[in-house]
Length: 268
Ligand SMILES: [Mg+2]
Image (cartoon, rainbow, N blue to C red; front, side):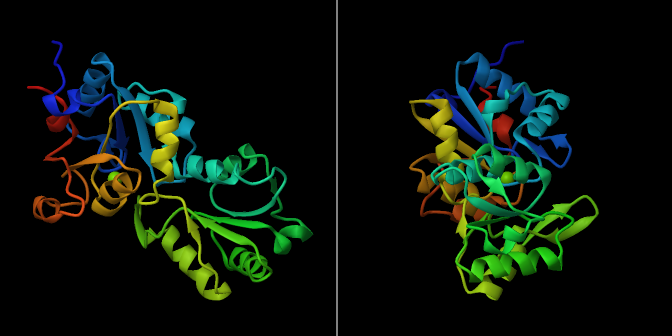
């Protein structure tokens, strides 16, 4: 059976989909999410997937999407790491960067043409500190990064999320690491994760022209971030937002509120 897309979605050329809470929750797709993505592809819509999670590379997200039955290509996934690469590309190549983060974040810094100074005497004189929460974060990293920041380094971080849902329970998020670095150094971080519009701007560069709809589950990150990028957003209730909270959002208001991605996207 070939199910078409809803009138709302048919009015757009491109759709940017949040992953966690929208396409999947943990390791399971939201109801009929694979059919929803397939229907949008069949209707000729451009698709991008965006996430504030910097733990994995875009290729690893693509593998997870395929494993769950959703077709996706590597350049369709824009993570907070992709946004870090994008921001770092605005600097002259060869900047010294001290990295707090997963192996994926190290690769995003290298991709931008910069030199990682972790483990070298230059670490405390880095030009830039990039910080994203990771499971092996330690006091030594905090110390080196603080010294680099006090000496004038720029601080770039993946966001201000206080916590995130790890497999073994709630864990401190990148916001907690960012707060520690800001407090110790007196500097203010440059954020690249949603609601900063950069992840959406990177996605738009890849999607090309045409009206673009953001679909996400978070009022601040997705609805607010979309507005900052000049885009419409629809809110799905399969993640962190309740129906009452979504209906109360007025500035901006979502263009639609739906129980899940498939209900928003599919025509029947
Ligand atoms: Mg989400």
